[in-house]
Length: 64
Image 1: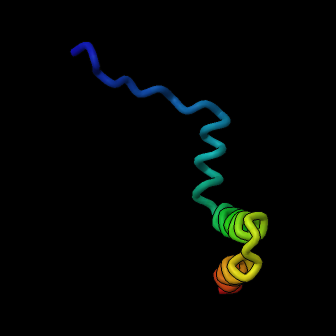
Image 2 (image 1 turned 60 degrees about the vertical axis):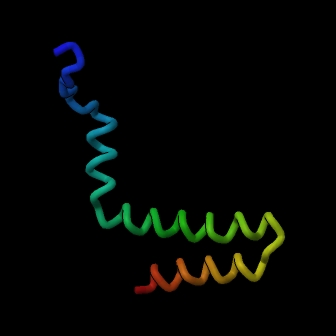
């Protein structure tokens, strides 16, 4: 089998990243990034109403 997959152990950085991605803090970090991205992109493109709507949706999700 020339194309057999061999598992490589996780590096300390990847292990820490995997542990973080499953945490409660990661959920809020992703939602906060979504809030800023959802506001920034439409705002820069000249759609302030859409920016407020997208950021508002992310804030409501964070509030829940």
